[in-house]
Amino acid sequence: MTPHKPWDTTTPGILRLPSGRLIRGRGLRHPLPAGPPPTFALYLLGRRPPTVAWENRWLRWPDFRLPTDRDAAAEALREALDRAGDERVEIACGGGRGRTGTALACLAVLDGVPPAEAVAYVREHYSRHAVETPWQRRYVAKFG
Image 1 (cartoon, rainbow, N blue to C red):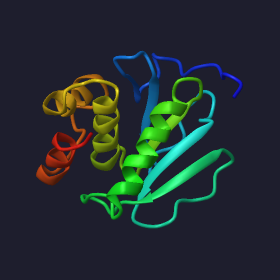
Image 2 (spheres, rainbow, N blue to C red):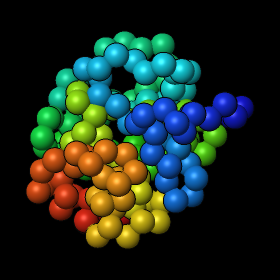
Image 3 (cartoon, rainbow, N blue to C red):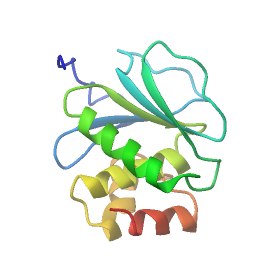
């Protein structure tokens, strides 16, 4: 795969993982941020996302809940982390906080952050509102 210019780390919503990989989190209810589009996106929604011009994958993940297929979610998150090595990867849900924050915390676990520290890591480096519910926090703590 041909490497792409990485995300601009000064852009809001960019999470730098311990490995240096950059992932953009965002809410789909907000306008598309300025700058280059993603080359791959993982959308976490209760219904099929709108059509976009870049490659994407959809996980059925209702608002304030957990993914309906946990094995598919783990596979999709591993793919997103792998692709973030040389692509612009975006993770998004409706508001960009609960489901997106949970997925970003799971990526942090896959990237070496201890599960018990992953939510705090994402809240510090992405959004203090990330991971909204107790069951989302438990999901991250058991992820890996």
